[in-house]
Image (cartoon, rainbow, N blue to C red; front, side, top):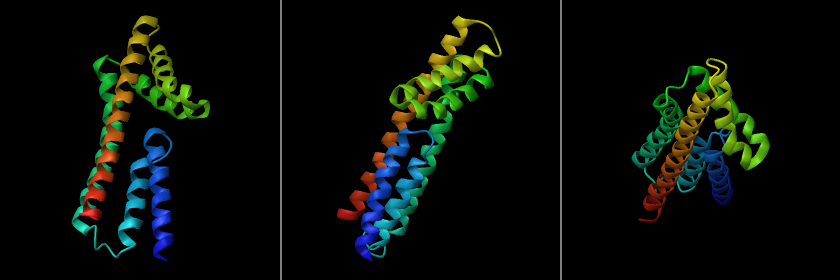
Length: 159
């Protein structure tokens, strides 16, 4: 049973790491689930409940960063609400086009969303770039938080 928990936990962590980058997968909660299985494999003796609570808070921070980053990037350039929604939809649709879609999807979505409000290409391009930069920096921050989660877990496990 313990081996199965460890294998499933490691599998979930791997899927969660991918989900941290892909917008359609809930990366941090999947990583947290994998860490819970690993911690549970020895009855939470190496990783205590308080440490696990810290990991849960860090998971919540990932969502806060995810939401705030795109919105703040859009806000900095004066984007409309449609541009923000367009960036979100573009990011989701971009999944189907691989890496180029993941990179260009939020930008294109923000530009299209902004063009539905104001027909100014220059402004829409600026909004798209600002929103994309927010999303990109948010993704880097999410990855950093998930890696920090792994570090906190690893420190607790091996200490």
